[in-house]
Length: 292
Image 1 (tube, rainbow, N blue to C red):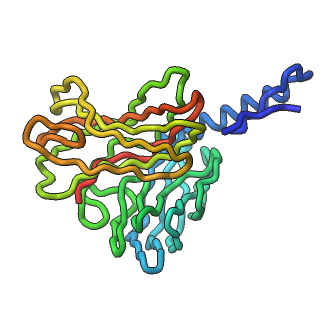
Image 2 (image 1 turned 90 degrees about the vertical axis):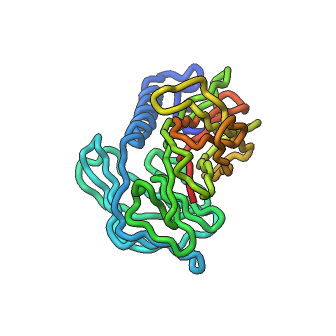
Image 3 (image 1 turned 45 degrees about the vertical axis):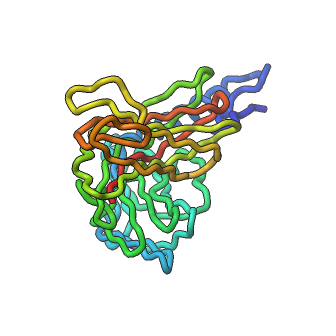
């Protein structure tokens, strides 16, 4: 009888299995399916949805037009018709994709207390503290609306702004843990005025011990990068998710310290690492600097 890996359930031949070829073929196909899912997730675009709205009193998320999920690899799209759905505190909003569709298809949105572990299931949003946080970078507080699922430059739900630094990144702890770059983006702290600036990260760790961290680095002025400076570290020892980690940042005119950024146009980098057990993993769903 074949064995299987503990997290991804990849089947593989058991010791001394004879014949072993069928089990090995099943293992190879499982790796291929998971690898392709990761490749496609890097390229999928989410758009449409008309007017999005969130009503906290009834826990109802509404979208007035079709949500389009575009797969550039397959050259097809998956459509989710206009509707509404109830999302309780801590629940995740997700959909089930058809990988590399050969024709245009339809799908629907579902909610759950946890995201099913599958190559076809993708989280779209999570409700945390009465706010909906979407994988595309927007967020909706009570009574907010947004023009479509994809963020509009300079604005998000509630009239604020944000810069998406990266996301949809999978990290697995090596025998010697290292930091891996999730994304890099410029951000001009001088444009924030008196608004509150918050670093927000969505993570889904699978930890058997220890913790994981997402770090924000200052790489220096746009066009003239320098030695990276650690700005902020967000750490969790809780396994499962998605979890929203956040830290308020302060804008200063000179000599920035921990959780401080300069009032100038600088490049920022988000990296992920862990101090857990070899093979433990962290999925970074999104990272952004939010201005409200």
